[in-house]
Picture (cartoon, one colour):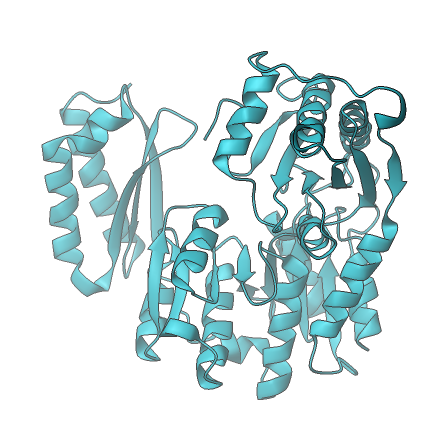
Length: 448
């Protein structure tokens, strides 16, 4: 991670941590880097979510791009995966998504996407940061070299058409609930499901600039749970603010997490001979219950660091076809270069219709183990993590749990905190082992 950009873009409170001048600078650098530096005119596509500040950042980015001679193509309110898709298929030099994903409305973010529709490489991001810090000079465009803006709502429409083409089945007579989180999917999701013949019931699709993710969407799925049951729907799908993640609700109102989705679709691929390497890619935070379920059906798995960036890197490196996070970031490398909530929902519909089974039955084999996670503030994360006595305590817990659970101790990426997590067959066992490791951290004097 760099000075400004984390694993998922430059993110922070609008006009506090991330301001309009940053956006102008990012546009200025990218317009030059992909354009005049290479003796050509750069083409950059931009999308945004429904936050009020997204409009400010959109115009600021366009200003910077045009000042450096680039043409800015504006997709308006759209999803992160749609920007990744259009960047790739329409041969843009790069793409920019303005969103803070599942964060509250007063936060925002700028995500950079390379010409292949993937998250921008670290080397380029570090150069952007050097420009923001005044370490690189970029000339302005003059006369006929000055760039322009282009209304590119056609790109969003092309993405909608692509999603519709993904479905092998008609959704006729299927009653589907959608929670659009008052975010980027508020128009697209219903258009796709309606076009496929579903009876679509939508909540939280009335954005006002301030209500994105507010008590709705994938981070507050309890409302969709009630809605699905009350309206006797077959299934429900909840998206986050930029719709790169999806959680589902079965017909009984139970939550279907990213771990369930990895199992459901991974098994479906295996049954059809499509699961290359016989492997599903997870992060270290996936529940132990997922691994037990995968073991039972003979599917192998890799575990990466937390972050869909690392999941995707594994998939590209080793040729794995499905991976994701418990939060609902699911990546299907045959169809997309990033997590795509709408695509995930369509793929779950495909399994339901192909197997002629309700979602509750498809998800049933994944039985979540109780989990206890406690955060401990420490003086030094490396010192606490690498302490021989702490490591010995962790190893002892792992040995005692055996194949009945697991322990995970990791450093927070943003706080002076060590996270101690145990999954086991009961809450009492989890508490006992978590507290035991924390007691050792305390006894060795690492607590802040």
